Image 1 (cartoon, rainbow, N blue to C red):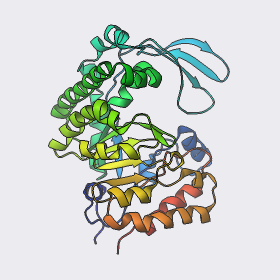
Image 2 (spheres, helix red, strand yellow):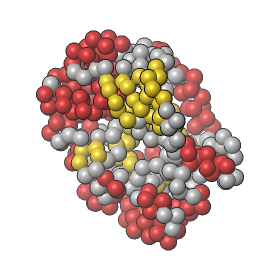
Image 3 (cartoon, one colour):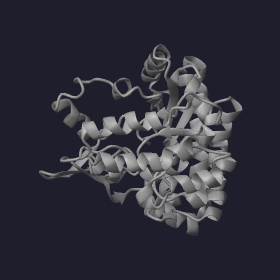
Length: 361
């Protein structure tokens, strides 16, 4: 087969149609980029998409912070951390020394009354929530590079917890499901309304990428029944809107989400990303169960890359790629993102050897 453009390749991968090779994409911690730049492997501000010939380019143009333009209020600062309140009224502690998920300290919104008073009236399809210029420039750059361009952002689960935290949200699912239904309905409705504004003025992307972390180690945050009752309607509205317009949908979900996959497939997603091994996800098992209906991105144990042992990296790749490539539905990616403990040479080998194994005759 003749070499394909990244746009052609990713469209076919998401539809599980023949391609010249598997795709490649990745997420990197900022600390990793800083290390590799300091070591001279990449130029200052060089695009890693270009450096490693990634097949996708993402753009995150929506801001769902309740109080737009709110400047975080620093409550406490130490040599290592900053505790600040954000525009959702959430009190979060972040580390200065490294990147990572912030510690959830407190939330203004803990129940339906707090949501209705402080947040819901502000969640509207305001043009100020859209970064038109950023989207326009990213879309143009992707076109110039023949790279698959995806609008990206969070879906309903990932839009709710910044407002009230996982604890209050999950308790609400059990004790006040109508509150959660209202949040899901509000965020999914506004997402579609903002899409309609943006895409009418700036053009449609090639596809949609959602971040939606619905699991932790060995468990999803909710049962499949609770997913279907409360979250699936929001996914059906957003994913369905995209699919009706011919836009394939990639959904990222950290943690163990295997029990939720039938519902996510019912919602219409085309590809699951990131397939976190240390949380209990098994790429080959998922492929055997769902590979006729779903494409995959990720599932390569990043802990193997931590070791910087090229023989171990080779074993990881050769155990999975020859199998997962059979149905044409795979994009190479770690099972999370690349931290600064991974050397440049290790990651370079991961990509080069992965593409060797993933090229079709």
